[in-house]
Length: 425
Image (cartoon, rainbow, N blue to C red; front, side, top):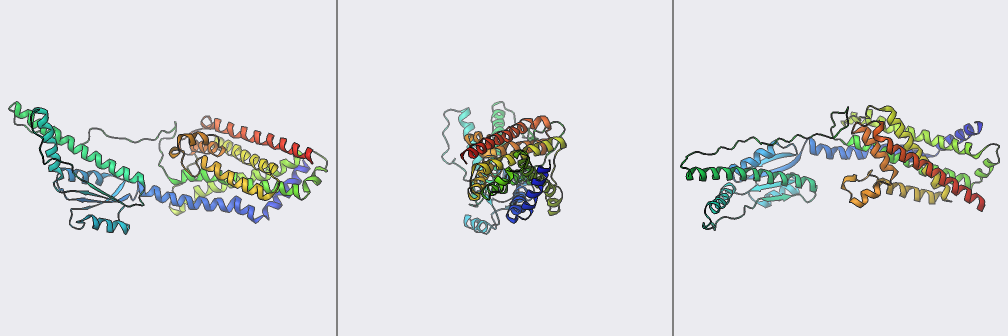
């Protein structure tokens, strides 16, 4: 026990004077959380609050143009500017404003678009009631211009164009039923117009698939970034821990410690316990940022769920997995440079595969399969269950088991490598 305490004190003193280690373990994660969360918060806000700046040049001023105006005016996804063709007469005028950053997308509804739509539908109905009816030569396509900022997010463009197609299809359906009603009325000698209701028959209600006990979730950058960068920073323990192990071995301190009475396991336990506390402290600092500091900057408050025991269990298993990986890297490599390069690059790769940098749902299928082998992905899925979906211990138990198995496996491999190198020396 005295050996463990002495090793703990020694390792703690070495760590607190290591400026590079302190920067990697505490300052870098805090900066990453601030920068990435603030950047992504603006992206979320542009979608849910201020909207996408969209210009609608409505030269039609009839049913089609007015329906598109009404539809986009109600849409929360865009901030609509309407022009009747007075200010923006040509496409060049629109592009000039778009280059200046005033709009992201512009839609131009041409003159007589509604009349062209009616003529097209009437031609369809004539051919339906009279197979010998000639196809009108003046019917053609209505060219609706969509002018796009080249830096615009593709998902924004798809959302706007999808909405445009929906409004056009709605008007076309109404015109179709009106003309059909008139044709049938004439056949039956009934003079009655069909008035289509303005209200949509289908009403869409968006809900999130949350576990029992959690009834609401508003997507925000805080809920995603805080656990992601906490995991990333904890795994970066590999750099100071691996360097410490190699340093002791290269400076001869490791051999001197082995001459002390007692087992080497107590020495190693003291070292690992220091970094375990560092991991817990890292996690606590980042959680405090999400709870108390980021809300002062106008960001949402972090919701850590309602199952503290599950949260503590997941964090402990994550910390053990990160420490064991640092021990493995420090045992395998012989120089601090090798350990730092391999450890840093491997963490970056595992974080990219694990969904820290890039969301899993936009990865190719084979990459998603590979990501399931990343311990950072296991931890991230566990925190998503607790922070976002309202899960409890049952929802994260398999993620905790995988992290613990990784911890035990890394320890066993480290021990085998250590024994092998001892025999060689």
